[in-house]
Image (cartoon, rainbow over all chains, first blue to last red; front, top):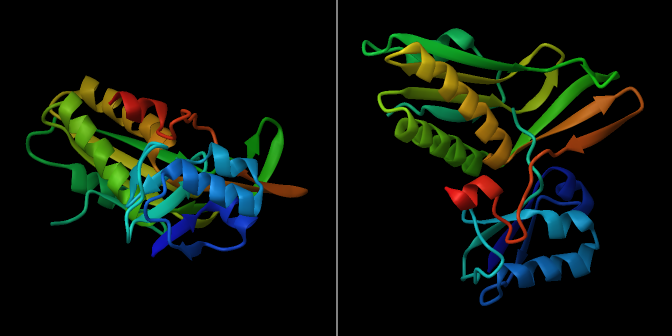
Length: 77
Length: 152
């Protein structure tokens, strides 16, 4: 099972901070597409993705237990 | 070991951050203090809400401190960022960099705040009299990794 985390504007679009899916074997691009087909929001495609708290590329394959975070454009400071 | 980079919901204290950066080898400590501004392009902000992915944000702040160590040998960096509701004039972020000589301290603290705005998962929501909006400045690449991150 995998945890998928949403933050800031994306958390509000999705309506929750976290969902649990079995995403093992999918690529990051697949996960984005799957989330997009469910929530239909442009921020999903433009978000960066972190797996286990590190930024990853779209071709990264998800493994069992990975935590996937959607990171909308950041605005700290 | 005491953390040198962290996220907190509590008000920030400049002195404690400066003290943590202080050491005998330093000839300078430069601090950057980011505060909540009332007017942005003529529009009045009532307050800000900051949100973070705390575990990852602390890792990325630590990465920035490490980058500064590489670029400016002999430096010591301390960074703290606040989350939650912040009022106008409240401190959102404090950066303190100590270095043997002053020029490096100025440059390194500037570097730290610019990097925070690129790679650290922290977001702010501006609340106005007539609405609210999540703010996002940073550019991402198609592959999903921040531009500078990919180069580093």
